[in-house]
Image (tube, rainbow, N blue to C red; front, side, top):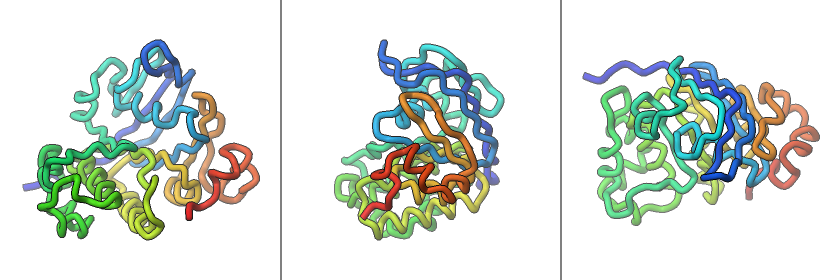
Length: 245
């Protein structure tokens, strides 16, 4: 018997300074994400968006500040402990196991809960068709679907996604966008999305933050930036505000 859907848990970062070794990338980040809410993170390349995700996951060197998840201080917890508490991560590099079959990639990450292998297949019918193929036999779009499915099958209450549409053909981006909207509609997850496709990001999340030089420089409802393309261009750069082709 499967467990009922887990409600999203709140996330709070207070004055977080973090990076890699002695190099500081995030410089005083304060951020909240309410339970069950969605948040998009925009910004030019190299401003710290991926480092923010990795810091929430416990994969960077923390130089200051605190991180709370679901009311618990997780500042000093290692990455595996954060996963067990309910944080799922879809990294930019996907990081699927190339020598394992698609189904084995899912099974190794499975934890009891609402998301099962069969439910992942219902969500991603293409994965069901390819379940016996190895990771290195999948297309880029299939690998991205698998990366999302593998994060979900850990039954998280917070899902972090780093550039899920990067490098994918427009038809695959459209399919993944539909998946993201289905996840949002379920209202069982808190979701943080880093995405260069600003039109997708602003349509997906109710709230958007913009980063620059390791800091959050803008935090407002997504509708504000959707309705003000000049402001959006000023914040994130004209080249990154357009749709990919």
